[in-house]
Length: 584
Image 1 (cartoon, rainbow, N blue to C red):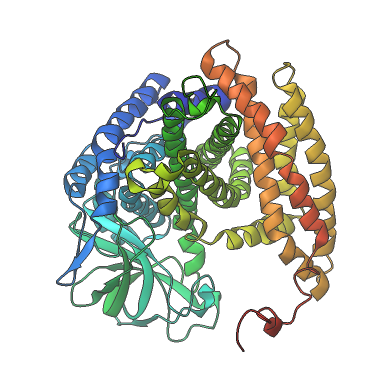
Image 2 (tube, helix red, strand yellow):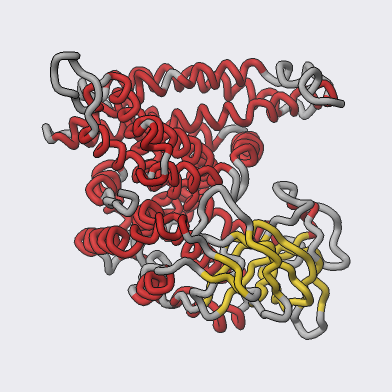
């Protein structure tokens, strides 16, 4: 059972076409050579590849992970052949420009394909996402010489890529990075320092690896303004793997401690603006983290649905045992799993759609509007999506009971593999601060008001009896949200310590609130697009109704926490937190 995976092609096509109207992308000049038939065939063939080639690697790579041998990382059995086929078939450059060897499809289509890759084997998917993200970084910030040398090998999959930020003394606080990049006098820099938590910091699937490294030049100021970004090709004499981390999950993907000892690097972007340049890569990866969460949730849901029908427990004492799905609590779990998965599947694809419009729309105003919409959605998709994914995969284990806790069912691996999503590419707490400080406060709520205006527009268009209950609840929640957000914006304008602390304490509940709103918006659109009497449409409407009745009320808790402010957090002095619990 652990190897089984069924790609949700029908549901992905429904959301892409019926809910989001992604066919409108094909009207943009950048995608003039594409049509829906071609997109459908890409996803159908992608599903076959994921089900037949990648899914068998998932449990195998977890049981026999990547390992370190004579200073080199050896990848799990089966990864090599699968990767060669993945690269040869052009999957790696699905949404990258044909000029650099890509397929030129919309990022939205790539995100749908990425869900299937991650659902089949998330550890395998860790390498392609960094390659794609590094290619976008190189296109945006690389010199012509660097692009000419490395871009096509990246897109063809001949070289791997990493994102190299974290140090033992500088995790989320990147301004404390100490790795030093010293000018060599010939355009190169020599990098010295140790970095940790580097996914695929070494692997034997590609002929080389390009490290995208944040480092500090000798004359740089302290803090993030002193960081520059460098492309550093791996070299056995100058980039050594110190160790592999022994992790909770993602065991098929090696996480390395890397030592840079005089490694040659070439600048990417402007000196001192490395973090700004790196966000070209980070934003691609943050979207993919949201996709990963949806993928694991979807895979767990599919297994739970099959198990709930096949497993028999309970029923009348004098009668036969009944399927688990007959029990009310099991039905509650399944509906919650479906509602959360569908909501964030649609929301991550909506974010990808806005990125496509931002990158490809010929109208500057429309492109800028889409860019700002994507900026608002990305932290919600990354943090809200991973929280939803953790909830869904844990519910799958609960539904399986004792069988879910043991390895053979395959669902406990989803919990372990998905847990890191709330941590890497910026912890969910960092995402919350980003949303409230950089996205809400920075423009006086313009992005927020655009977000809720779009939701209200769809509420007003909801005229069918099937959609009306969720629309009514969503409208009431929006009114409460408007009042809370107005209060936060007013506090943010004061700039005193009390107001700033209030903003900081409200960050996480605000993000939770926006995730509930975004999910409710997507479920409203899903229900509105479910117009037939088919079983699939009836299930979608039921999941949307469940979202409104069971999940949207969680907004009241988030609103109460925003209103509570920071006082409940700050009643204790630092040294009092462990009083009575921890020996002084």
